[in-house]
Length: 307
Image (cartoon, rainbow, N blue to C red):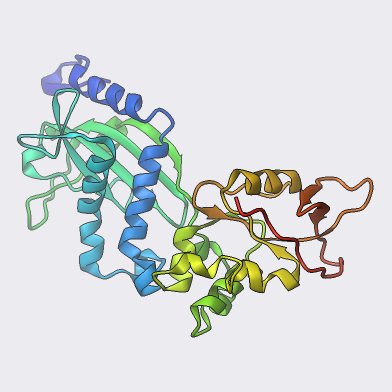
């Protein structure tokens, strides 16, 4: 990475050290992706509000997002406090900047000439990125807002040293469903019925527990998934099973060749009894089952293992 200050072209060893440290603590990017997903879900507060889109947030909540990203990044990675800026990483001061608009990070006066960690996430695209850049004067735009903050200019955006440029954000399922499907799911006054409709209408697709919470809008939202009065029980007559992240459930999903639910995820799928020669067969509750086709008769679903 080139520093390029005052016409020089010397490697920016401090910025390189910060980049190496960030790659070292999160080699695959899963921890940063989780922080960004968690922060957006925290802002939506779906269990209390039923919200799941950025445009449903109040202006003050959107403004607060950058602060929450900073707090949650420090909580996840244990970054030391900086004396002047947000963090001390690899022994150097680093300011944490988040923007919902790619490239529109607001750089305060105290960060001019300093290293900035820049983050972006977009729920509509299920994408995120993170990089580091030194906010040199020649890399900043001329205009400033009321707080004397400015943005990177075109050269500044090109100068970002990307640590993760094509990160994938865990899908916000409700955001990517047809509007009429969401209306069907949310069009009941009963949390239990909304969750039932979610797993009935959204099959063979991972559904995070945060989505269940948003649909249920109840503190005990996990109760709405279980067998005893929850979606697993009420959808059993429809031939639908809902594997979760237990290892036995994951093995069943893999055998059926449907998405395997990860931690905190569920996958709904309609099944029917398997016949000799059928592909992708799973043993469930002592008999063999496969994914049901649209023209297969509805047969009550088997009982999933407890664990």
